[in-house]
Structure formats: structure tokens, C-alpha cells
Length: 91
Image (cartoon, rainbow, N blue to C red; front, top):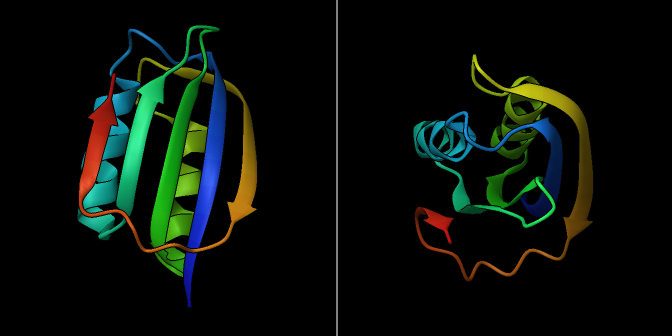
């Protein structure tokens, strides 16, 4: 089953390579979407793909890369659109 989720990650998640780590992980898992920093210090991401792979991306966000400290992850399931190609870091 193909799904889409939007995720907000809070904690020490900016300036620690979080977006690049998410991008690398998404490419390995074959998940499409994007990730970006938010002005309030959180990171936001959208993932589309196989339900199992998307769930693995959510779990990765709960851990984060080595230098990150993840305090909370909010996940909202959205309607799958299939509009995304590849995975990118947005500014």
C-alpha cells in the first residue's frame, strides 16, 4: 500500500545534519518527498511511498542522526497524491 505522511520533528534538530541524514535514508528506502527546517526550530518532512518504508522513515526521525536530540515527532497521515519525484531538501 502506498501512503503519504507529514512529520514535524522537534528538539535539537537544526544544525546537526538532520535534513541530510533524512535525505540519505529516504533515498536508500526508495521514499519520495522533501524535508526542511522551520523558523521555530523544528524540521518538517513529507514522505510518500510503500507503507513499510514510510514507517521506517518515521522511526528514523524518532532517532535522528548522531548529533541530534529528538524530543517529539508528530505524524499526520495525508491522502496519497503521488506528485513527488525523488527526495529533496527544501529551503
